[in-house]
Length: 51
Image (cartoon, rainbow, N blue to C red; front, side, top):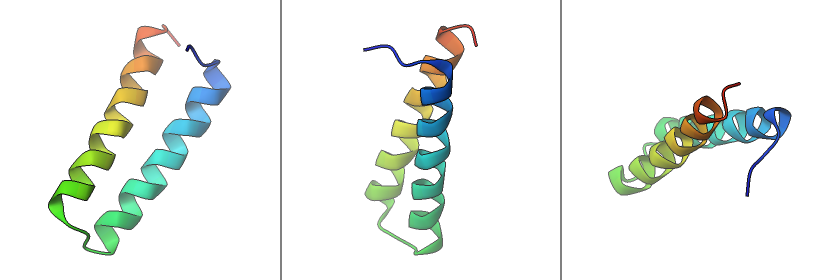
Protein backbone atom coordinates (compact mmCIF):
# COMPACT_ATOMS: atom_id res chain seq x y z
CA UNK A 1 0.00 0.00 0.00
CA UNK A 2 1.34 3.39 -0.91
CA UNK A 3 1.25 6.23 1.55
CA UNK A 4 0.82 9.92 0.86
CA UNK A 5 3.80 12.18 1.37
CA UNK A 6 2.36 13.41 4.67
CA UNK A 7 1.69 9.87 5.90
CA UNK A 8 5.23 8.78 5.07
CA UNK A 9 6.70 11.79 6.84
CA UNK A 10 4.61 11.03 9.94
CA UNK A 11 5.63 7.37 9.86
CA UNK A 12 9.31 8.25 9.38
CA UNK A 13 9.24 10.69 12.29
CA UNK A 14 7.48 8.16 14.54
CA UNK A 15 9.93 5.39 13.59
CA UNK A 16 12.85 7.71 14.28
CA UNK A 17 11.51 8.48 17.76
CA UNK A 18 11.07 4.77 18.50
CA UNK A 19 14.57 3.97 17.24
CA UNK A 20 16.16 6.78 19.23
CA UNK A 21 14.31 5.70 22.37
CA UNK A 22 15.50 2.12 21.98
CA UNK A 23 19.08 3.38 21.59
CA UNK A 24 18.77 5.69 24.60
CA UNK A 25 17.39 2.82 26.67
CA UNK A 26 20.27 0.59 25.56
CA UNK A 27 17.98 -2.09 24.19
CA UNK A 28 19.32 -5.30 22.67
CA UNK A 29 21.20 -4.98 19.40
CA UNK A 30 18.62 -7.09 17.58
CA UNK A 31 15.79 -4.76 18.63
CA UNK A 32 17.71 -1.64 17.61
CA UNK A 33 18.66 -3.21 14.29
CA UNK A 34 15.06 -4.21 13.60
CA UNK A 35 13.84 -0.65 14.26
CA UNK A 36 16.64 0.78 12.11
CA UNK A 37 15.70 -1.48 9.20
CA UNK A 38 12.05 -0.43 9.55
CA UNK A 39 13.06 3.25 9.44
CA UNK A 40 15.31 2.64 6.43
CA UNK A 41 12.39 0.96 4.63
CA UNK A 42 10.17 3.99 5.19
CA UNK A 43 12.88 6.34 3.97
CA UNK A 44 13.37 4.16 0.90
CA UNK A 45 9.63 4.33 0.17
CA UNK A 46 9.78 8.13 0.46
CA UNK A 47 12.69 8.34 -1.97
CA UNK A 48 11.15 5.84 -4.39
CA UNK A 49 7.93 7.85 -4.44
CA UNK A 50 9.93 10.83 -5.67
CA UNK A 51 8.98 13.15 -2.85
